[in-house]
Image (cartoon, rainbow, N blue to C red; front, side, top):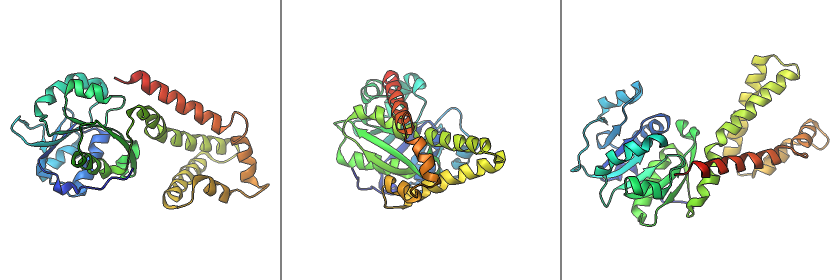
Length: 276
């Protein structure tokens, strides 16, 4: 479901980022690039990278004291889920009745977030292409999140790519299995294409370049094209040709369809097991 964007420059109050690792750092870079005033951003992380430290010169507050008198419009939780039990209570004093809490912690439910820190909670699952602004994030809001807060969350999350909203939190396990873990499946495809190229006689460095650029270029074509995925596949496939011969294997019994179904089911099952 599409959400109307709220320009980041219009967010009133401070935005506090707890956790500035790869994903948190990607969000922060996106916010600043899209007009969020650096002086209204505070970052809390005991292990700051040099890139994040450099932002202090632009006015971003780094591990500065954030008091209960600060007007915190949004608290974005990007800490590791296993550290949330300790970090959450320390952050709770920042959260007022109007504070939006956006969590990108994998497997951490709205109920668990509410129990530890409270707030008006949006739970989100981004993926690693967020690092280059081409991520996809799926978000679900708690029932008490109002339209303005939801739009603010959308703007914060959209800084790293597209955003989709769902109404049923139970779907987040499948989301995690498809888009959260999905980049690893694509990288594995590239790995195996390169390996198969070597097995077919190609030099390893050439096979790796061919696999990398083929996957990257195909992904970009998929991104830009209005055609559905099946049509794009069919457009590469001449009847009786080389691609058809390969697809007969990939689409045959115990082929990619069955493998991917089992893989996504396994990831979703593990997501449910890890949920807190």
